[in-house]
Every structure is written in C-alpha cells, then in structure tokens.
Length: 493
Image (cartoon, rainbow, N blue to C red; front, side):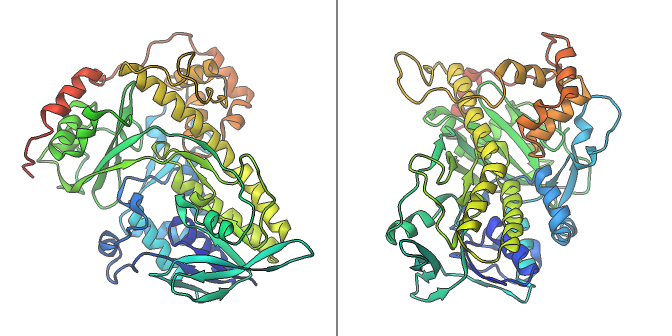
C-alpha cells in the first residue's frame, strides 16, 4: 500500500483521503486552515473558520452526479449528511408529464451546505485508522530524486514549518490556486501551460433560515431543486440547503457598478422582491438573513497542464478536483466533479500503487475523460452568457472587427440543435430527461446528443413553440434603478 500526502483538506482532498484510507493506504492530509471545532456537527460546521476556502461561505449544490458518486462509493457519507438535516430533492417533479423510465431515480440533488458536507467528509476520513489530518500546515515545496538517467520524480514534501515528509505519492488538492505549479517550478521541472476561459461573472449571495423549517416552503421551487432563473441580463437563484437554511445568489457582469450595489443588504433584498419566485422567501415573516451579503469574483474555467507546452506527467505527483480543473461555478458542477474525480483517481491508484510515469499518464487520461468535457462546456456557456448579458446592458460584443481578442469558443453541440433541445424539454419528457442529465452532470452533451431517440423527440417538437407561461424578470433598467435606490438604505434586520 502507498503512503500518500494530500495537500489540501477541501472536498476533493478529503474524498480522496476517505477513498484511499478505506483501501488501507496510509494517508496524511495537510491543510492550512484551523481544525473544525468539536461538538454537534451542524453547529461545528457553522463555526469552522476556513479562510483558505473562501468559496465555502457561498452557495453550493451537490448535483445528481455527486449523489451517484456518494451512493456508489461512500453511502455512509450520504447517510450521515441526511441524518444531519440534508435532503434529497427529486428533480422529476419539474418534468413534463410522461412515464417514468429506469434511471429517473438518479435525477436528484442533495440539499446541503458546503460546510456541512465537508465536515461529514472530514469526520469520516479521520475515523479511518490509516488517515491523519494535520491542520495549520501547508506544503512549501516538493522533495525530488532521480528516477532514471535523465528523469526525476517527486518523493515527498516540505511543509511551511520545515518538516520533510517522504511519500510514495503527493497529490495536489490545493484547489483553484493549484499550488503544485509553483512547487514544480521551484524544483526546476518544465512548466506546462493551462487551458483557460473566463467566466466573466460576479456573484452576490446571502444565506437565510426559515422561521418554520418544518412548515411548507414559502414559495414554489420552479426549477425542481431551486427557485428563480438565469435570465437574459442577470441570474437570481435560490437553493434550499439543510436544516431550513437556503441561499440566494445573484449573478451579474463584472464592471456593472449599479449591480455591484447588491452587496448592500437592503439592495439585495429589494432585488429579491423584484425577481420571479424569490419574493415570498425573503418576507420577514418567512425567513431571517444569516450574516452579510457576500460578494465574489467567479474564477475562470481552467484545465491544468493541458495547454501549450504540455509536458509528460511528473512521476509521484497528481492533481485532484479544482487543482486539476475549474468550471464556472454558476453551473454548480464543482463539488460533484471533485467527488467523481477523487474516487476515480483512488481507483487508479489502487490499480497501480507504484507511483510511476504510467500512473501519471493514466491520471492525465482520466482528467481528459472525466473533466475536459465539462471544462469545454463551461467555457462556451460562460462566453454565451457574457455575450447575452452584455447585449442587454448595451455593451459591445466580446469579439468582432473592432474588438480583437480570443475567438468565439466552439460549442460542444451546434447552437440551433441545443436551443431546440431546450425548447423541447419544456413539453417532452424524453427531451427534458436528456437536457437534465447534462445539467446535473450525469451525461455529457456528446453522450446525450448521440442518442437517436433523444434527437428524434427534439426534432419532432413543434418548432417555434412559445415559452411556458410564467413570471418574467424585471427589465435591465428597472432592476438597476431598484438596486441603486436601495443601496444606501439601512438594513432593518
């Protein structure tokens, strides 16, 4: 069995530690943040200080892919989360009428806060005798040794406290910053370029708690597991979580000064009252805010080491989760992809415990199969969203004769066909099923659009069918006026 050092104790690092530790591998997780406090899990999760994981304070979802991974590889973790107040949401409640089919039982999401899920993973990993977690500890660099006449391999790490830790395998689970890039550069390894595509998104989010967690919801979840929508000029989406907590998140283009006022609690609440489906949830009689409005600039889509100058893998070093691939957070795939990647990577390590070049090549192939399709979809969808929202705001196109820059990304599926599928999904259950499996990570666009039955139902749908009736969002000018009008108001709660 290998001895493995995992640099980072977020979702991906903890999941990999759990998977490897369950196979008997010796694992040491090095995590920069403070340890979680002892005590009841939910309360401890709420008090856990994690400045190294700033996104943990924002809304997350575990989509159907993540639920499937937990059901298959860590059912005790899923059971523990449910025991702590998380809930499974059945997405088929939002499907058009039609018969159920095998596989529909997978169309669920787990309603849980990131902090609660991470603490469940943390305690599950620590319960294994071969896993240890060292908090307040970061990796400063890697140890190396010759592995042939002209090659070197990673043989361990040096911590920021000077401790030298030998290991058969080092895994970078440091998240979006992918710290292994600096470790390898400092050790003299050639740098491999990354593939990147901007998200062009700022988000503003706030958690709330229902006054009556056991009562009926204040309003409908028009998206199955969420309320609200991604509109033509902004997004406003509510996700229920555990124990009566829910989060509302607004998305806007960076540089929009009027929308930046959403960081003001009164302006945030006013925008909720104006946005479809959200008003009843922020009524003072229904819920109370939990903490401030948090603003975050969304990271770009990134596929590490897959760009120009791509090098052969360095033996003894792997990446997992966001350290390997980041996708636009608006699409809610990060947590689930981190879990899927971690458990698949553990399978690879189990097949080849010798951390040689073969393992590095197999891990690179795994990244291409598991993560690249979602990176490519994220790049295109981020570009399309920015183009649409910019047009609504009167901004010039992202690319054109007068605006040289990166060309339009290649769509994973031709745009007219994808638009037809989205329209058909409003009335046809087979089309809805395919579109939803893409949206929840269960199948890639290439897989769904290769299904002859799916394509036949999409093409049979009435062309130009009107969109389903429902409340419409405010016009861009009205939303800006409302946000600006309340930007200086005092928050009463």
